[in-house]
Length: 328
Image 1 (cartoon, one colour):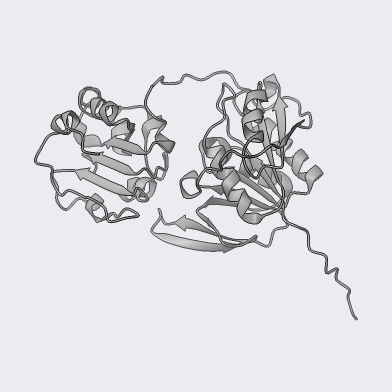
Image 2: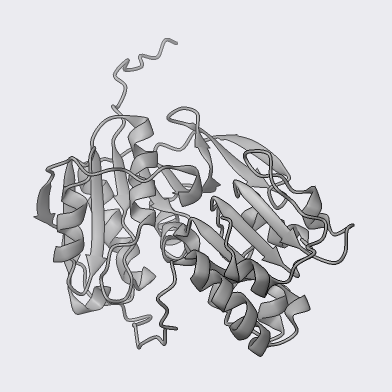
């Protein structure tokens, strides 16, 4: 028995989930997600949901490569409640027929994209670091010690991409801004509020320089008197190891590593961090790594940057001396 198959191939098109904070401000990770989506070719639609998404939508409309922006404004979208945003994305995907849904591999999108995958009955591919083709991707496994090449046969590919591996998309577009389909509030959960630590330092995930401290700093006071002044002097973001977070020296939003934030700055200064595999997974792509540690056999000295790294087995000067004469 002969079966006839259509030779028509659906052209690739992408739907990007833009990340905003609770105030509706666009996050830089959104531009990296757009850059990743551009690898597929075809139209790129961007969905942004917030209590007032108008300002973020206008910024997205000016990004090169974006075809249209779907803005969803309403109280139900405040805080990025996944039970509301995921059904919104499903509505847009079904209406547009997008072949790829892309979001940044950040806590915001990690909370939403798995729910969307379940609603569409497809698999999600997480932490993509390279796009080989429309259906083949690379992602790290075993805390970054191996790279898996994954091929998906699903009709809709849902990806979270690491912002540090895709250069942010640049300005130069003039996309149309449209209203997104209406989605009501969820009966399961609602956004109540959040308490944020105010800081004038660069945001950790996107900072070009990062100063991180470990358990060896021994106290919150040492972070405040040693690490923070150094970071302020060189314009760096401040991070920490999980051990320092668990010890209560700093809040958990400063944690760098497999279960924290992924960073890839031009300069990463690790003070008193031995370099557990979970921590290295979050910063091993830094271009230059400077380690300050009294243990010459610490695992962090085995890590390598994208270019030959300046790793110091020991530092003859203290951090305050580096602070007064910055060389970076």
